Image (tube, rainbow, N blue to C red; front, top):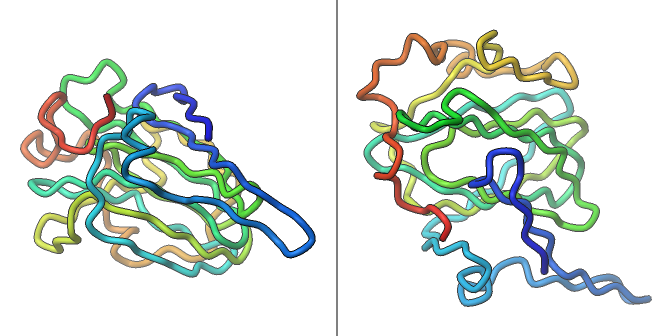
Length: 190
């Protein structure tokens, strides 16, 4: 297994060992002990699975007061995945990291607390993710996906965006008390 920091070093690309033969393949997709040894010291408490048709955009989501770190992967299809640093006081505040995930190789992204997360499905996709905190609708927040200040180069114009996601605010319009603060987030890596 290999772990590589991306342009914002707290966001990690995880490449599990995949063993293939004539029967198919096997991969260990998560082990608390192994991930801790690799510097991802996070207790995951909830797993989620979504199916998105090609062109569907989900995000950019985050939670306050009950922040979530995420470990995301694609089981079928391809997605363009984005993590935006929204930690007040961070030197990379307002910057983002993007990566195209596909079922090939079962690569994962580790997104620590303090980041807004979203993706657009480049083809029909099954997306799985682990969360370090339970979903709490009262703490759910989001950034609008097309905030010009974020300068995200989405590879396609989404054809489906939920009403909720269309109504999210731009980063500059979010009050500071609705953003995480650098150094106070759970679910960071060592």
